[in-house]
Image 1 (cartoon, one colour):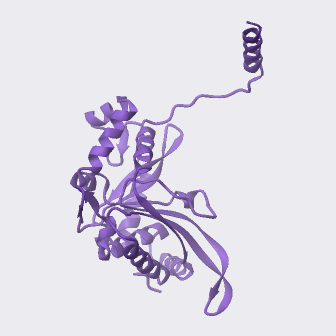
Image 2 (cartoon, rainbow, N blue to C red):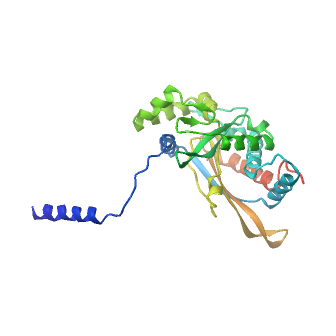
Image 3 (cartoon, rainbow, N blue to C red):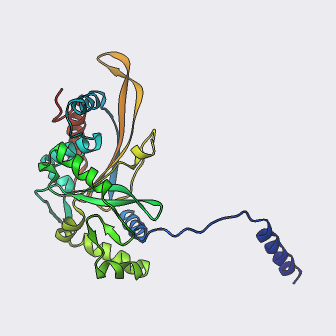
Length: 281
C-alpha cells in the first residue's frame, strides 16, 4: 500500500518536472517506409563497403558543366554507370521466383529517393528511372531535377500521380496487413519490377555530409547507398597524395547471386567509376 502511494507521488513529481515537448504528425508515406524496413530485414543481403577514387570523374563533370548549359550531376552520372554495368551482370538485379528459379529482366529500372518537403517536413519520395541503361547522363539529370521541382502534397505517394483508392486503403490497414502487401509484391516479381524496379539507389549520405558509410535497408535485389565524397590521403602512382574518395555500400541478394559473381560485378563497377565511364575531358 505504502509502495503504491510513494509510486503515485513519484509520478506526479515526474510530470511536474518534465520539460516541454511537441507532438508532430508525419506524412502517411512514412508508414510505407517502416513496412519496407521491416520486410527488408528479412532479405538475405550481403553488404559490401567500398572506397572509390572519383577525383578525375568529378573534375570531368565540373569541366563539362562549365561549357554546357544543361548541367549534369554527380549522382546522375553514378546512376548511368551503375545501370550500364548491371546490364552486363544482370543476375545481380534479378528476383527469386519459386524455390530454385530467378527471373532476369533485360532492363534496369532504378528506384531513387528524391527529398521533398510535405507540410514543413522533408520526406524521401521514390522516383523510378525506367530503362536506365538506355538513358544518357543528361536525361537522368533532368529527370531528377524535374522531380525535385515538382510540387508535392501529402495526397501524393509517388511522384507524378495522385493516390488511388487502394493506396488510401493501405494507410488505414494495421501493420501486419500492410506488410502482407509487400510480401505479395516480392512474390510476384513482374509486378514488383513494374512498380518499384529491380535496383535501389539512395544518396542520402551525401545530403548529410556523412564521412563514413551508411547501410540502408532494402527489399530490392541490389541496393546502393552513397555517402559523401571526402578528401583523404591515398597511394596514387606510387605516391601518397590527397584524392577525393567516395564511400559506397552495396547490398546484394545472396539468393540470386553467389559470392564470386558478386565480387566480379563490384570489381567492374569500381573500375568503371574510377576511370570515369562515359565522361570526356
